[in-house]
Image (tube, rainbow, N blue to C red; front, side, top):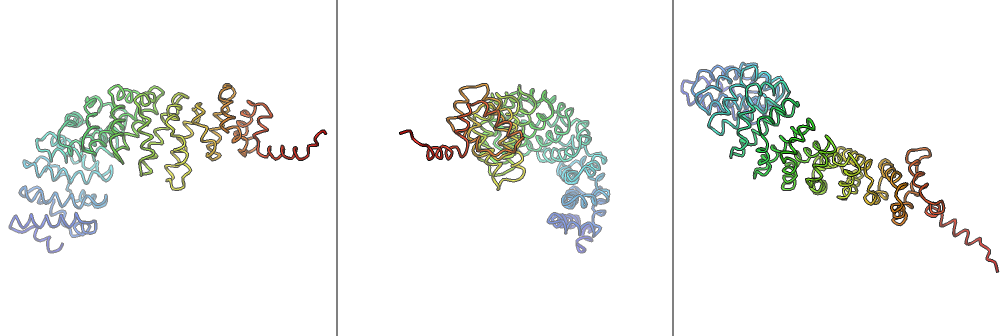
Length: 466
């Protein structure tokens, strides 16, 4: 470091550039070396030269600032303190697109850490210039500028609003159909980071007429374009029933369901969550997910995926679909998903989050489910805290359905209920009493544990009349 520093002031320009490049590569390697660049008092020197030197040196200097700033908020703060942001912002107006790109990249790496650093980038006047950069012809510059706008927008509604006020949404929305996959990724990401904060911001993104154009991204060959497209739709759908309804009307639910079916792993996650958000808003929106055949792919994700957090998301989404009415619950139960949810909840290898989500989904669906054939298998495996919901549903349906009562006896349900040990006076005991009152006393006695012993005893003690 101490040997490279004087070379930054060498009379030969190529030596200056090469020294800066070497420092950048060192700082890029890890945070200890980046720390050494800061301690060596090299940054102020770079910042001074940024405004005066030729374009090759500017690119190298911006690379050093980016390499130092990327590691941690503390190192990024050091870059801010030496006055780099204003100079980098001036570089965004440079004649050379490579210099603009290097400056936008450095600003993005600083802004991504937290809202204070992001605000500092905004205060340096970078946002309007970045919006100009996304309108330049060079694809690489468009990508970096969109990525930096995304990094600025992500922290708070206020920062996202600054990006919106600079007119970014319209220009980003026009690029959704750009053939370059890497640019599309950044554009979709930036729109997601704006839309996620509030209803107003989400509505502004929708008003830029991104539907139905954005749905084509869900069929893209690039996995990240798919994922970011689904994320954008999710961030809009989560806010209000009206926005979700708008997406349904544009064909968004069907498109997301196709997308979940055609990919694997984390790419599925935003799509799964989007269906959960849509279904959570209202009975009608949940029915839209059911009618679009959304339940089978969600069940597939629950069974196929290796990662617990993806399974948990699928369980949560199924719970949101099934929690509205008996009709909704039946649609989920018929897909034979309840035993899967139960076994994941009881599996000791499941993560805590997965256990919480599967338990909640089970409760949501069970509390509405009156389709008894789907509940029957659970009677034999469920732990007490789930059992009360299952028995509760039987106690609601059996008093009014003679066919179901007959089936309940022949399938062994009544026998199973007699074996349940419930606390006297508990809710579970009340449910069991309600069920027992639906049957003649001798049938209930017949299926009670120990009844066969009593019968056999009576046989032994019986004195035949000769």
